[in-house]
Image 1 (cartoon, rainbow, N blue to C red):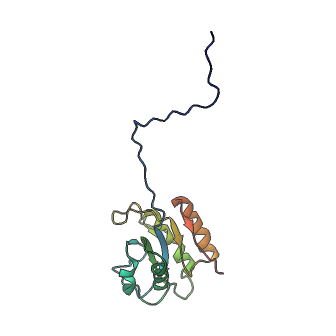
Image 2 (cartoon, one colour):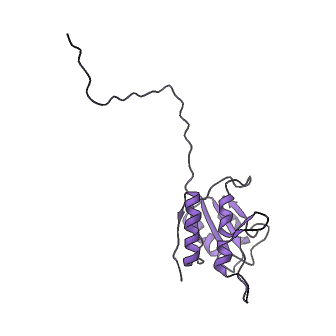
Length: 166
C-alpha cells in the first residue's frame, strides 16, 4: 500500500534552545541645546551626559538658551533617560561659526566629536552606555540642523523630532 503524504507546511518548534533576547531601550532621548549660564561641571561643552532624572538637574541648566526649556518640557511629559550635548552660543562677527554650525558640530583635530556628532559616541562612553533613540535640537532645528540630525539618526537607528524653523 502507498503511504499517505503530508501536503502543506510543517512547523517544528524546538523548546530546548535558550534564545537570547536583547531589549532595546527606545525611550532614551538625545538633545543638543545651548545654555551659556549652565553649570559647566554638570553640562560640559560638546560632551554627551546622561541624566536618569531630569528634574534633579533643572536647577543647574541656567535660564538662557534652550537647555532649561527643553529639559523642562521633557520632565513635564515623561520620566526617561536623557542624553544632553551642550553647545556654545554663537558669537557675532566675521569668521565666527553660526549657531547651526555649532549645533551640527563635527570632528576636532584630536578626533573628538562636537555638537550632535557627540551623540554618536554616547553608547561607548563608560558613564553613559545608552544609545539615544529619539533625537532633537529644540528651537535650533534649522533646515541644515535637521538634515544633519537625520544623518546622525540613520547611523543610530533613531527618530528625529524637528520643526525645521527657517
